[in-house]
Image (cartoon, rainbow, N blue to C red; front, side, top):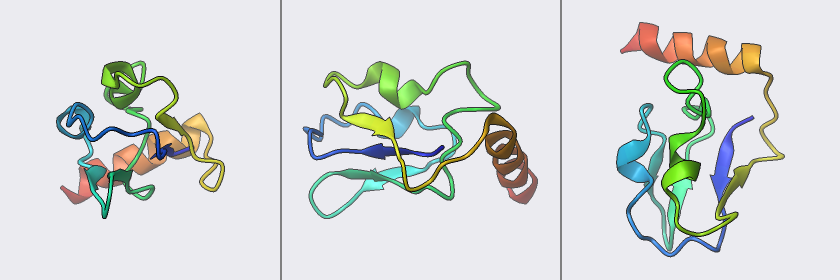
Length: 84
């Protein structure tokens, strides 16, 4: 499942440079994650790097509107890599 940034975000700029898929960008008030690009770092790392570097607990959470299996996340990663 893709991740999403909640309203707990303090715009600290830690997550955006960590995203290997460039899925994180500044939205209207806070950072946002593009669910079409987010693979939870599957294909790159063992854990989501944005969640690791975020200083605010639970500011980046699983997005219940974009539920995906590990296999689907890997397929998304492979599609992103193939198109780049």
